[in-house]
Image (cartoon, rainbow, N blue to C red; front, side):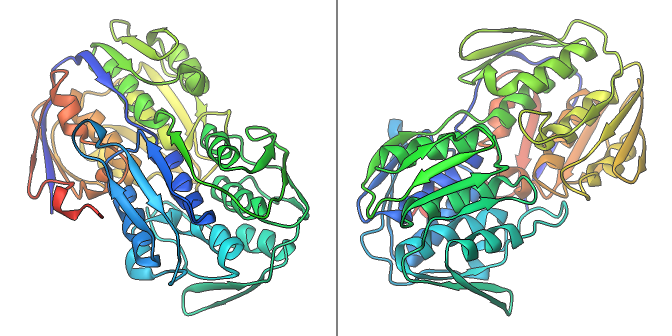
Length: 431
């Protein structure tokens, strides 16, 4: 099992190039199930969850081809026939986004069998909102032995109001509704940029979608979708992680190839802390030469502060003067990184959904354990400013969502190395 070894104390200087967004690429890959023509995706990150999804689509009968060399971030998916519309537990047990194939499979094939999602151990990820929505569209759903099974004739449009804002639920039903008969209106939708990116692809494929990125999405169903070519948006969470890394290390770091408009809530909160940034149309420069001042933060659905940057912000808060109160409103079990940060010298107390972080505390190296994807990132950030050599175990979590993070960090001055088996292997590519 791979580990990272980091020696702290070096400012990050130079330019980091941001990869495509995993959380945008996954639903776009699932959208390829809706057509028998090729869908070509560009700017696809090379991370574990993407490879898992490639394997999943191939197991269903899709032809999945990867580009090489300069085209290594391109994936072509051709679902001419789907002889096995099933997402098995063995294939998706490490990834929560498995439910994204449920809606497309039901809409295209009339039936589906999908394992309940896995992924990070950060709290419940109820699938009931997906199921209620699909039932409104006319699907019959049963659950047994850890699987959701759905069947239907052609889905029929309906008005669906989400009881709770859900990103994957919005994406799943959005895809299903594209092939439903009549009009579907989705209310209380997630407004994340990844939802709008999915809708942009679907419209290129011939769907008729309006309002993606707002609370109300209207979909006029069509009988057939075609192939398309689409470029995945930049990863705003990776960008946020590197912005915080540059600030924490007192560096001067240019985060290139990102979309600053996707980072408004994060940048606003960082400015409260005292972090200096300068934005262009596609980059953010962070200058970490200011002292940090504690501030409170609450995670919210987009356009609020993203839950996927909460752990990284907590690492920053350990280096701010004063007390920060961090409230997690999205997941109920997303403070598992706190105990590992405490092992490194942080002063953090957990009170239910709140974390009280008292800074400024010097951090020292320790052996720590990554519990989930974003927790892994927070430990890397802490190690970058810790005294001594930190060992982070279970870094397969970080490989799920960050493309070659150790190489990007090395490129801007971090002392980091990986021990164990490297990922990804080129031999594992689906052809």
